[in-house]
Image 1 (cartoon, rainbow, N blue to C red):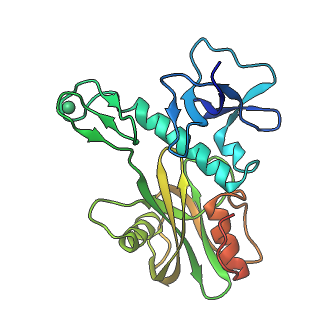
Image 2 (cartoon, rainbow, N blue to C red; image 1 turned 45 degrees about the vertical axis):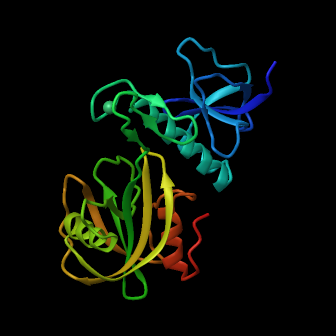
Image 3 (tube, protein in one colour; image 1 turned 180 degrees about the horizontal axis):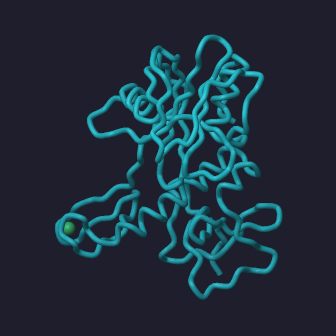
Length: 252
Ligand SMILES: [Zn+2]
């Protein structure tokens, strides 16, 4: 019998863990995705007819951010993204032939034309905007039914710098100009395959005008009178804490 491997076993965005949120150990299969860091950690989807082992449960990966260390959450998010990428690249996007899994790197290769497909990351800027020394801009996402207020965020477009993306997204979503844009930190975010790139910026000019299909409300809030904000562990939470308490940026 072969040695057991620690396994990330997913059913969509849910992960199989025991009651203490620990991963199972299983026998490795030929089709499993193996992490570069060694062959002791594997990832795969739950097979269609596979039963959930006794004592185990499927937990949404988002929920694990509050249970796990940053390193472990990041490994899980890498696993879910690589599996999803592999699932979505079964055929060559150049000539349509069925692809093979590369033996030694994360790539899908076309046996007919040798085109290599690599996992893609989508850069997404997220900005915490302040006005004066005691106000922060928070916005409510139109698609989110809760009362949570978050930050302005959006995807970087082709041909654009990160700073230009910050300015464009802020103008599009709430109609404001910002200045003094400063990089803070980044965080991989596996929903679906984003790299969140965090900035802080200061209000420059303009009146708030909402892009109503994206944002249902946006206001400058006093630091000591905030609405409900994103949960601890998210980069937005860390960014808000950073500006309110004027402390060095810490993303965990
Ligand atoms: Zn091809």
